[in-house]
Image (spheres, rainbow, N blue to C red):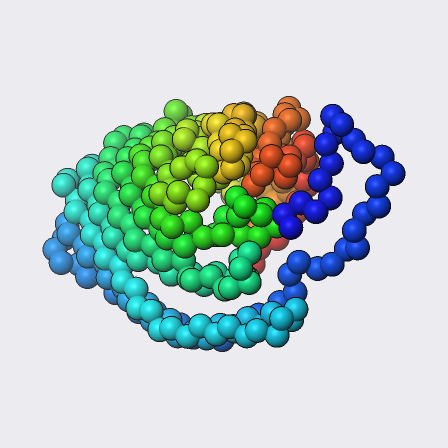
Length: 311
């Protein structure tokens, strides 16, 4: 059962005896796979570039249920393609477009002790870039559709279940601004609309995918002609509200802002020392979730000190 030891915290019953514990899943999984990938890029003209690729996978997956002795096997040889192009309108502006297919083996078994079909997807993006004096800007629209993506089973959260189809579309904006010789500001914003079409789930929202996300960082470099000196960076990231469960609870994880800062000193071109603090102001937030009773908290303030030596 999904919850053999149900407890009502508002009306507990004392003196009961728990049922004996037994494993609900016990599998051995074996995979054998080989992949061949080829890609090439053509300079059609001085301004127009094409990229094409093909990927061939051959795999064999076997899952043995040690509780029942049933063995399931899957054998397939999928072929996936990708195609992209970039056209420079001028020395400042350029446009690009990409299309591709994806394939990923899924692991484990579902509530019915059956293995899962591989995850497959198709997607495209179109966008433009501008390289102005002191400013680099990029805008991209993307549209991705995938099927058989695993998520928690709404009937029994102890198991996974495949989503019939998931679509993700949105716009991403990136900008880099050089304010002065030593200072740079980097910004990013993404709007994403992710939905599923599987009626088995109580909502069409996708777990842990924010509709709005943004980052803003400032970077300062104060190096001499020998590459020695300090560098500093500071900024923050914003993650919007996200679906925390796909059952009838309607759980929504709140949005949050997390700050980060770092100081680095280059002793030489080969040796540098770095100190960085993540979640600088020790914000409390929920990083991800897959059910109302399984929420992963974000890490508290974390400070790291590192030394890097390169050849």
